[in-house]
Length: 400
Figure 1 (spheres, one colour):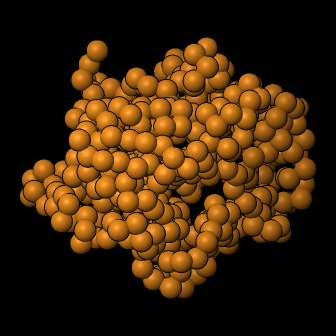
Figure 2 (cartoon, one colour):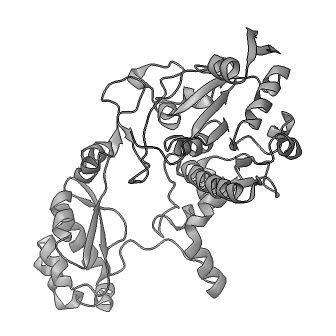
């Protein structure tokens, strides 16, 4: 087995839900030693988020939790108890990186203030992920991914001008913030190796999304023009999904497209009519052009158009793929991208695999997601040399 890139890097994981766990997953899957602290009996709320493996609702059967918490050790600790604080302080002393995604001020309420952490471990990198950052007028505001898409400006530019802005699905903002947090953690850790000094990293989920619309903000700053959603049909092929016989494709053209090639691909000679050969002509006859294009696309299959388009230099088409298409996609199959890394031990379900390839220090799933408190005794007793007694969800101790 090859050595992993982050072997011997110790990470204290005080995160829950998605953004924080995804950050620590990225670190753990490349070899970091991740100790995940969970509230006794309750655990990470992500354990209760559907869908569940084989329909079970057990605290360890959430497929999202299984994906986000590979290569981690779970320790049950009540951070409000004296023993919980004692134990976490010992873990702080023994860690290189601490990652948390509480609301601003919550970590300090557990006694882990910036000055306290610096006293315990001056070399520690502390990564804080929150909705809007640790400071500013929005710092205490609640939010969801849908709010991030709206406030981040991304929602405004998605969709057609004649319709409401489009919302995005799932948790893209959370995953983007988690990726930023992992990158920032490693940059800060590299600096610690060089200087011997730890530092604090502040990750705003909101700003992680706002970075995605940088061209619209720079355009406004330089010209005063607010970019709006585009008209789907304005004498050109839409840069948006268009319906075909068995689904949808996204047609993209680069440069001055020879419309005879598009007509040939779509099998419709009428698109080669001289009046459609220029952008001005297509706009002048936009209604007729739109009807012809829609009719031509609906006669063709998505794979026929996808592979056919790639035989032309100027035509680049994408498939709008569902989950089944993704799993069976030949490029993903070639790369063995989707992996069976769940707790069932079977070849199903399939989860997204490595985010990138390293030739000498690879990504590897050595441990599936832990059960709640699975490693409590290993960490508290064997590593920290504490004696434990579980009573009414509170860990109590006497040091050995």
